[in-house]
Image (cartoon, rainbow, N blue to C red):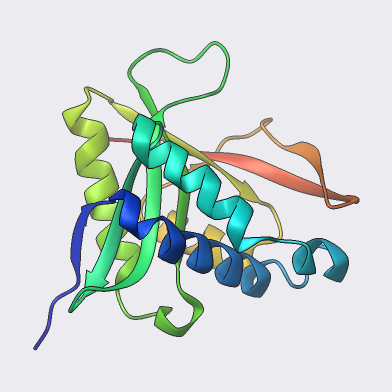
Length: 172
């Protein structure tokens, strides 16, 4: 039986990461964002973003793979939220390829992300999630995250106003 492996991303992984980011966003957000916004997502733009992130290590980027086929990725680092202590980490992104949902990819990525944040000295982890993204909310709540009351905010994405909420959990 093969086991999902997780490793730091390399620049060569940027295209696969971008493809997963676009495909999984289009799948997960099809009921949240306008079709035009989803259609406008560009693998080329995402690839440039992830190449820079990998090159600068901001955020730290990891990939989950099986037999060298990338199945998902995560990005994590210190919290970007103003006023948070240096011991607060943030899951910037965690995506599994749509064809690999419910196969343990997310869990493998979360376990490695948690370990990476702890190695950086973080005692708490946060993330932002669209309030209507029930699959992601369920996943993170099963991973021990709780909704932070009073944190809900509205953002504009592709011309649509979307509610998101911050989730948090202890790492100690």
